[in-house]
Length: 234
Image (cartoon, rainbow, N blue to C red; front, side):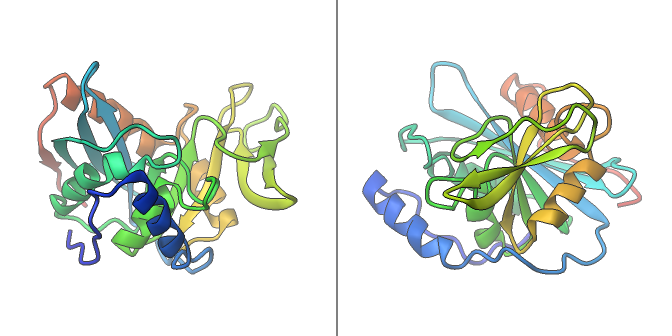
């Protein structure tokens, strides 16, 4: 997968925050994602007690969600862990994992925030701008804003509000299981992002793209994962 527009990642935290402001101006919260045939999930796992990051992308065929391809990349980061600046730790390894893909996913789901972020540029939005394709953030916890508890049934939602503005949606992907927090990343509307998350949630709290990415990232960290996997029919 070709990626043309990549900035430097070896920045100070202050420089990183300034760059987030510039990139946020490029985020689009609308757009027709067209017919989806491939959806990817992206995640990263850390080696305990070190700054080694194992980033992965898993591509699934849509709508049956069969795994088509997997790619991984590992790197040691010098950027400190600072809430709100996650992409500056994980971004270089993620970029390399995407570059190793042979397929071209139509939309990418990230384990993290989209615009539901202190500066409106979580990892899904940030990477969406760099990848120049539709992206969705699916987080396990709120980073900013507040949300009421959705009703108990699968598909129930409640808006994530910040200063009266809806910046995402709490989504119940499985009955009586904690919701996930969905926000648009780039080139996608919130309603479309929510629909995609529900369409790819198959009996687990996490939608299948990020669930598969989470499993693969842990396997790579343990030394059990292949660098790439391709299957026919993609």
